[in-house]
Structure formats: structure tokens, C-alpha cells
Length: 297
Ligand SMILES: C[S@@+](CC[C@H](N)C(=O)[O-])C[C@H]1O[C@@H](n2cnc3c(N)ncnc32)[C@H](O)[C@@H]1O
Image 1 (cartoon, helix red, strand yellow):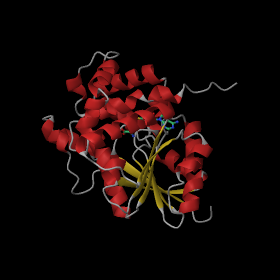
Image 2: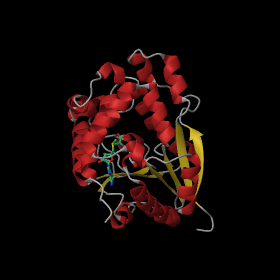
Image 3: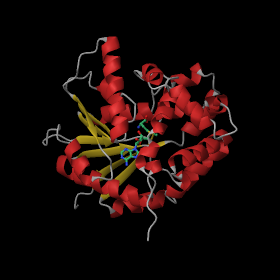
Image 4: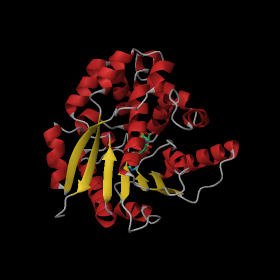
């Protein structure tokens, strides 16, 4: 019998670890969120399983900032005004992007995380006098559950395209789980039209390159494995050809773009006094994948 994967809710604390690094950037609400969810404490808990220090993991901050900003830039470039964000954790891109009254944004995550996010958003709105947004929705969604995915898109207009996005989700899913989630996204995109965009499609080589770049990152990946039971390397694609084959077989067309597009400024580099050249040379490899439904599917 096939061994089942560990409970996905074990992955949820990683959202607060990401929030820890995002606080060193100018991403909207990042400092408020880090404070409210006590991201420093969660980060320290992950660090406890390693022999590294927070200083050695600092270069991860611009990577998290880059992926957040690259997704915002990608949505704007496509001029899509309906966004379904999967596994959004405690990132408040929905609150930031719904300043545009034409935008309809649905943020989703697993039940516990989603509940916590709603509470954080409420507190920030109260503290900063931000009125409730009728164009911002929160839904509890496990991406492996088709019904929950279908219900999440109810706020959207059927006549308009949507962007399905996520950052920091697919790394945690096994290949079998990636296939299930991709099938659900395919169904949704077929109905609305639009595009699926994510920085999350990693190859084994990407991961090994990251580990060569920083031993601290290898240690943190091991710590994530201990806490979540998920193994990034084991769940990664073998190569870019494997990525292409995998998603083409599921009825998608794929394209890859550099994450760091001209004009994208990473403020955490200066704030943390990181060597700009090292960050730039590493960041040059980072990609966003853009997937659309093949015309005959
Ligand atoms: C590393 S965090 C990323 C959060 C957010 N995207 C960010 O960048 O801050 C991973 C997120 O995936 C969520 N997650 C894990 N498995 C999931 C699943 N099967 N369905 C939906 N969300 C899931 C977790 O709850 C967690 O919030």
C-alpha cells in the first residue's frame, strides 16, 4: 500500500517563518504581520533544529521579497483583475491589492491558517482604520480538495479571466499531490480563462544549487523536513524537461520568466547589509512559471 503524506496542517508554521523574513522588506503590512503572529519566535523554533544562526539565513529575505513582488508585478502586467491565491499564509497581498476597487481577490489556505489570517487582517484594519473591503474574500481551501477549490471561485465573474497564484506551496507537495492540485487548477482555468503563475516549480538542481550557495539554507530545509515531514528534494522535479512534460501531460502550456524583472527593487538587501552582487547572481536564476490551458484541452 502507498504511504500517505503527513498532514498538510503541519506545513502551516512555515507561513510564519516566511513572514519573519518578509519583515525586512517594504512589502505592505509585513512588519505588522510579523509582530502580530510572533514570527520571530516561530523562526527561532525552526532555527533550534539547526546549528546555524539567523545572520547566516539573512540572504533568504531578498528571495522572499523577490517572489512576493514578482507575483504582484506579474498580475499587473497581465492586467488581470480577479486573483485566486492558494496557500496565502499570512501574506497580505489581498489587502494590499484590493486598494484597487476593480480587483476581486480571494485568499485561501488550510482552515487553521485561514482563521488566523482573518484575525490578523481584522486587527490591522482596526489599527490602521482600513474599511472592510467588499472585493476581498477569504476561503478555507485544501488544494487537494476539488470541491473546496470550486467553491473558492464563487466570488469571480465568469466572463472575466482569473490569475491563480501561489508562492511557497508546491515545494511541499509530493509529485502525486502536485498532479491533483494542477488538475483542480486546470478545471478552474478552463472555466474562467486566464493564467496560473508561480515561482514554485523547482528542480533537484535548483535545490542543490541553493544548498551549495548556503549551508544555512540546507540546514533550514532539514529543519522544515523535521517539522513538516515534507522533503523538498524528494518532491522536486528531475529537470526543466520533467516540468514541461509533467504539466503538458495535464493539459497546460508553460513559459518561464525571470523573477527579477527590470525595476524590481529588493529593499531588504540594503536593510540587512547583504552583498548585492551575491544576491544578484543568485537571484538571476529565479523564475516565475506561467501556465495556461492548452487550446485543445
Ligand atoms: C511556506 S508557507 C507560504 C505562505 C505564503 N504563500 C507566503 O509566501 O507567505 C506554506 C503555506 O502552504 C499552506 N498549505 C500547505 N498545504 C496546503 C494544502 N494542501 N492546501 C492549501 N494550503 C496548503 C500552509 O498552510 C502554509 O500557509
